[in-house]
Amino acid sequence: MEANDTWYDNCVSYQLDVATFHDSNGDGVGDFRGLTARLDYLRELGVNSLLLMPFHPSSERDDGYDVIDHYAVDPRLGTLGDFSEFIDEAKARGMRVMLDLVVNHTSDQHPWFQASRKPGSPFRDYYVWVDEPDDPHADQVVFPDRYDSVWSYDAQAKGYYFHRFHDFEPALNHGHPRVRREVMQILSFWLALGVDGFRVDAAPFLIWPKGPAQHSEDPHAYLRQIRRHVARYGRGAMLVGEANVAPAQLGSFFGAGDELNQLFNFLGAERIFQALALEDATPLHALRALLPSLPPGTQWMNFLRHHDELSLIWLDQASRETLLDTWAPHPNMRIYGRGTRRRLAPLLGDPARIRLALSLLFSRSGAPMLYYGDELGMGDALELPDRLAVRTPMQWSAAANAGFSAAPKAQLIRPLIEDGAYGYAKVNVTSQWLKADSQLNYTRRLIEIRRACPELGLGRHEPLECDGGPSVLAESYYLDEGHVLCVHNLSKDARRVTLRHDKLAKRECYELLARRKGRGDAKGQLILQLPGYGCCWWRVGSIFAPAESGASVANAIAEAPS
Image 1 (cartoon, one colour):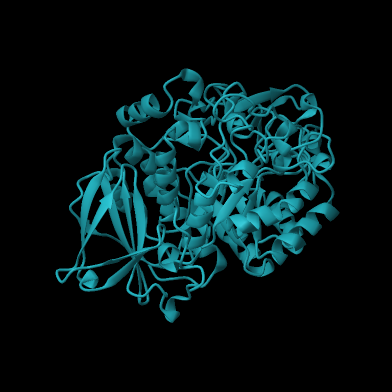
Image 2: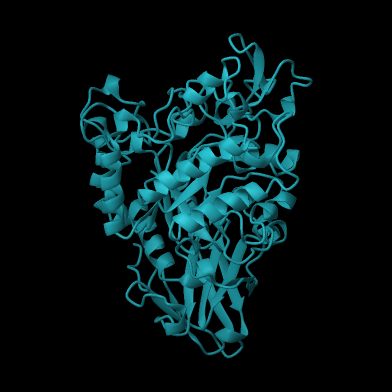
């Protein structure tokens, strides 16, 4: 893969919900002023891109994804002025800001939908209406445990409207030119306020047919239109798509490099957890053949967990059940029959395995994304419904309400995790900041070193020959004259590993995580001792990255973990 000269190719992103991050005014709901006050924490963590979950006014039935007004901020979260101040402060700290673009559907309380219910309304074609559906299309339902049809009847409109998600989220008809113009205006509005990109929610559903509503013969032309609009008016802005589709369809959402700039790497996350469960690197080696080639100007956004479930949909049934039995043994840990709704820390359990998973994330080809709280090892609240289990308030300290809010506990937007191993008294930013060997400081080191190794995000990736057995994943990354090796032991047992590469012959090597030195022998071999769930990142040759690679010398050396 050729390196691309764009900010998003190698950025480190952090996904958060403004409403659950930090409350500045004591009403129990996080807000933009609270987020702005925590930007220095994010800067110290090392992230340089923020991905915000929806913050628009909504009917509050789908955690903000039931949008009522795409041009406003939920009053509980602040004003447009607060948002603009946040943008300015983020940019002053070198951080890009991306928003969730939720235009596949709206709330049924949206003025467009309310108008569409009236006979003869010009907004009727903004949505997909039929007098009688000819088929429930149950296979198109996103939430199969709740709905058995994509059609719901509206008595006032005397017709059925189409929805793939909740019945209070009618789907917009993107085949209609007026709807497309509305989307372009929404993009322009936020781009003018300084936004750097958008997560395109439910990207395939924007272009796939909705009942009788059809796009043009080339449905992907719409994605190209959105891309051109963002590129023209966004001054370097990008689009990252949520497209959890079959492997054979993935490449079509990149187009020829003229559609989505990035795609969430759902297959990559699935295979990481399969490899961890099996203690076998084979699923990660097989991933190379599953993922399409990247056209110029495109990239993967890698993740372990995000705000939705951990989807295992592209594994065969037997493999999926094996993983669910491993990671989600109880029914309330599972969701939609295709994945688990657990957070990273309680899912993996062993702290060493959690650190191994984080190392795998930050050493993948592409751009990594971290979900808020996973840098600490926050837990989940399985007593909350559906996906809300992983959307609890950020745990800042052991003080009342985890330092999230000064409001009475009953007024908090969502219950805190108070008890057990993941209660906020035990897992919080303040206590981990004070401990050099905490997960927070380990994650910070990973991000620091990752940002100093452009080979990982932009370089050529190859498997590296070694004799550690199937549980050892060894990989080489090259960019210009820079060469980085990453080695992971997926087994709980220690492994002696011999790496082999002709470029290791008589070359000094520097381990970036533990800050130690090694040397390849005359045969091009480097011998390592890896503990159970151990990992190491090596720079071959000088600790100083070659000038051509653009790496930062100052950041190339990290403190050794204790």
